[in-house]
Length: 301
Ligand SMILES: O=C(O)CCC(=O)C(=O)O
Ligand SMILES: [Fe+2]
Image (cartoon, rainbow, N blue to C red; front, side):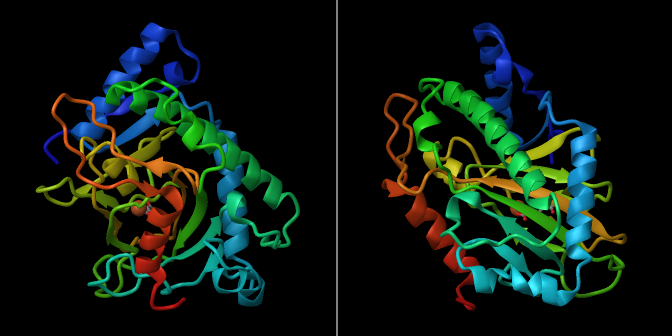
């Protein structure tokens, strides 16, 4: 990409003065308009927490198939549960993805218990889910300021958001070997994604009109990107960027948090400049996400 992916300290958006928040919002807005991906520091999540999360993720994926199948997405319904190797195909023009995943969507429970039988596992994931919700809210205060609306514009649209915490496991596969990608090229559906990667790189991003470029790992940061829903909400001022995971030479784990708005929130393009015309009609968070999930899983549901 023509510009390096910036690193932004978001601590001011969590608890800074109005002045510091404005400065951070400007840096964030610049990243959303230009590089489309950014790393965050100042997120307040300790390395120890991340180690515990990745240990828990490894423990889950190392369970026998019958344990994972007990909590399969196809059994639980909605966007929750275990998705096996080769089930998803993020790039419909390519082979299915060489990855397995576990989706946690606490706001879509239906009262059905969809947790693996691992002591303390659920509590750890729920705590991290709530941490990510807070980080997402802080980022949205920055987006709102930068898009010229009140800082709390998004607050009542993210009361019970359709957010998903997703554990991912990519088995090792020699990069030279022809075949399935780790994760095929795609853009994310929601507003923003907060991604943690455990030591093995492989993520590549392609800014519109540019080349595929490695997104290096920077210890202690999360990598964030804008999803299609915020692109739509910002009336294309912010851009969602295609990305993919190449076949990792070593076993790879990542944890992605996808933040979508409330089911009944109305995503109506923000017109921040005089004379702007909406590029999209309003849509509810539910209808929008459903449309995108059907496109990914349509052949199976
Ligand atoms: O595992 C990663 O690094 C990225 C995964 C991803 O882009 C996704 O699941 O949407
Ligand atoms: Fe993605």
